[in-house]
Image (spheres, rainbow, N blue to C red):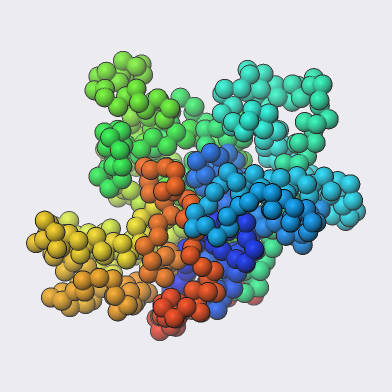
Length: 575
């Protein structure tokens, strides 16, 4: 569905894991997502954007999934009505034993995941024994329809469980490092029946996930809200996808990002860049298979969302790659380039398949990347596609190429400058085919951003800090001779108004920016509790009822009306 930039709308970005509802189990879930849909519908918000919901591994990052298709069990609601086979007594018994602290402001993934997988297994066993015939038939149809990815995934997940949850298939016995070998291994096991039951269990978990997220999507459609999902460029090296489709990847290289000043969180990143560890794609083999794996990935995403964002779209044109995996980063930290080359057969981190340094190579990258993205666009029907085109080195051809494909890029006003003057690019000059926002999940909220500017202004960086505050005031069309010493309600209103009055098709605030809080969901380069664990302090409905936060929610709602960002066209074709 071509995006109509004249039909301006507004959205909100909320990670599903951060949501709250009554009786949740320490993490946001599909029922909380339904509540978020209702929140959007009440407040004139057309688009509810969220982060990837694929199944994660030990670091809990939604951008490092163990499957590009399977869904994260932790995000499932554990309520008998939406989990076939689950009984209330099972729920009460297991929750009491687990002792998960649902009131905590941080997610204890280990505890939450263990509890929910236990509940799902109890429900699965009961479903196998007494499940309704119609539901059994639905489950069989699901397995048949999704067999292409579900069969290898469930085998991978079964073997992973046999290795204490370790997804690093390169560390498994040689026999288990391919699908064919693993299938033969399974037939020879003395406890084959147990392993087959485990495989069926993982298929059941994904069926339940499919049912729940399908219900969220249908609920959103009934409320006139579009759900926007997220497709990461990469997938974990230690994923079911790479394990079962090794020919589609180049495992000799690890994708990442070049060194940049903003996210230099540690000495390695400062020197070499970010090594994400994702394998890069063998695009020639993907093309020979008519991009079958990518098409499947898009279609499965659209089972649960109306639109999607492509993360790190730069990677489709050229990707910064390391000739070593992240586990070896320590070996290279203190080395010179010459010393590093000795360990890597003469290879250094570089852009692949080529950089953009010459006009010829840039044109070739543009043509090849556009061809791949066209496949993704042609696969998605009745779908808006937003491409995350951010980075320290963004080639000039990228945004025109995206616009030619009918895809929207990003506009982050506080990142875009006029180099000669260091002034922010005026709001009115941003491209209409853009998703405008002040921050993504990787960035600090605007309240924290402004406080940082004030600290610079009143610190050692006083004069330059004041100039930067003045530039921001001009961007927001405010008096550049006066500026508040803190993030005020009036300043919050100005941030909203300025973004909503931009020519950009879609204007989105993170939920933290809508509420003017300083919570942060991810800090690139860090790990542990700094990333993916933050929960909102209250339910969305409680924020609406709060005397302070309620004013901010209504401010957002009213601004959507004032700037005519209510969809003037059918939100869904045929509606």
